[in-house]
Amino acid sequence: MSNADTPHMFSPYDWLDEAVIYNKRYESIPSEWIRENTDVLVLLFSARGTDRNGIVEKFYEIYENVKFLNLPIEVIYVPLEETEEEMKQSFEKQANWFTLKPYDPLVLKLKYMYDITCIPHILVLKIDGTIISTHGMVDLEQYGKNAILTWLSTSASSKNHRKLSKDAAMYGDKWNYINAQSNTSKHDSYLRKFSIPETL
Image 1: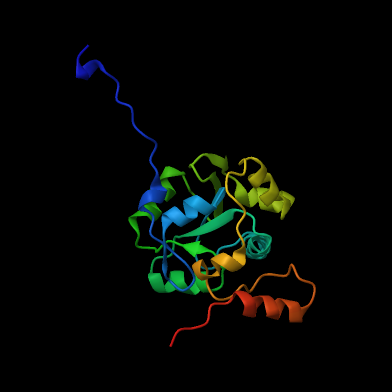
Image 2: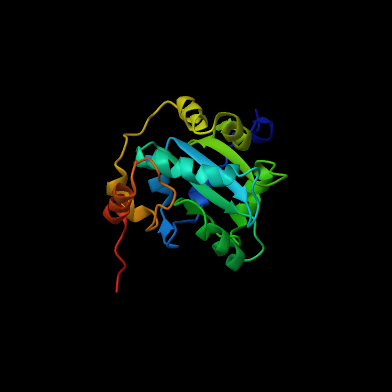
């Protein structure tokens, strides 16, 4: 049998390997860290000023509160703004998660790879790239915070649950949407405990 007759076996495209991911301080986050510490990866395709019935804004709160509980889920913002300035204005108001840059060629690859035709759009993946839900917005609209539990339950936990306090340096300085604690003084204490001091 000649080489021409032998079917070629291709590995699935692993876009995470080429992703240049940033935190709120625009520091690069190694994709390996995401891979090693995440069971569920959420891609938020959006642009400044887009929401649907406040679902995206509610997701900010849900995400930060599940991070407070040390659940192995991460969100990457896939910005569809025209300029980096617009993207930064949008990202500034979002939860303390991660982002790509708008000029990154991966943004368009992901948009076409996952057939994103309208925004905002939430796509939920296992860390190996297997799709959990193509309709994350609908999941959140119907089930609220319980959608997260559904997403996590479809991905058998393979990661050790890590303490947010130990990974604080990977995130931005502020957790503006955490309300898991009952009073303001505890909330302020949490922000002080897990905020990264500014370097001079």
